[in-house]
Length: 249
Image (cartoon, rainbow, N blue to C red):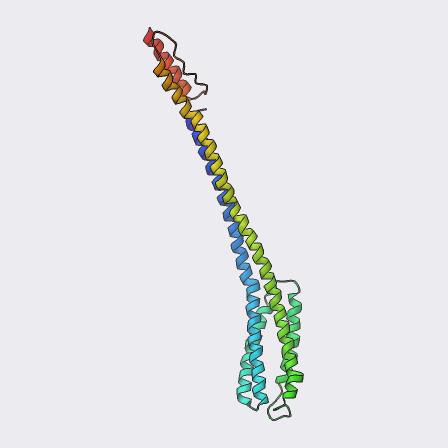
């Protein structure tokens, strides 16, 4: 085997190891990127929609208190705006069902919200409900708490799922790093081995040739560098022997 091919083989092994490790790392990081996008598109969207529904619900509660106090115009304006915001966020959550039993939570939110809405849709100002704190606490506030609890349950479901997926992403990140670590360790081992083989393939034969040439006497002995490898150094040893034979003749 020629020296050039031996050296090239050593470099090729290192390059192949690094290429395989790089390809594996790219693949794992690509999977992580897709998982992050899915995490944002699914759980985060529903969590943000849930937060918006809670904000809208609290605004509606404020609007109801304004109606009870006799401020019809301000109360109705807040209720209409908050109801529109709530329904928009609810549609976002309803069209983003990704977790198990999430549809059950959506149905409960819809049912409890309609019950809550039935309390403030009919006229309040000018009726016996006006200035009736007792009516608010015995009927309206209970429905308010029920809707809010159902929304928080939906948000908790998605937060728990997000936490679980984040843990899985952490594991994927470790898996993505490992091929690089293995490749570096393997490359270092290969470099040590490569250095050992270079010493035996290049350095040792050169030293043998140098010492043999230095110690050779034309009339006293045969030239022999004792090259065991069948490569260019062996050819060089044979050529030196033939040269010496020609010089002797």
